[in-house]
Image 1: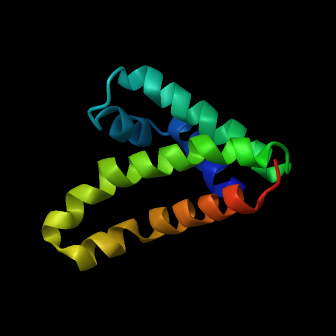
Image 2: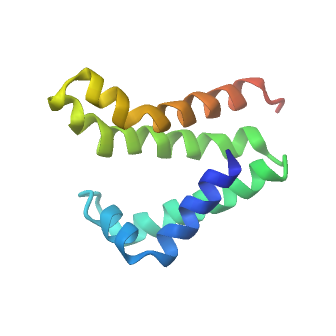
Length: 107
């Protein structure tokens, strides 16, 4: 889990294509949002990896996954539920795992 978020954050930093894709999502203040998401993904990923403040680290990552689903996967519903399920499969799995981590981790 931590690996996915740390890698995702780092790739947004070094890949102009990924950064441009994020910036073009239509979010307000896209460059600031990109920096915030990158920082949250890397820092929260490291916290989960280190098993420190895991419950608190899961909260922003859950929000990021919900936003990712809404912004990048829900639009594929026009192609049908099966296409949406296929496109969103990894995001949904990540979201479910984060919720499990949040609910099962003390503090």
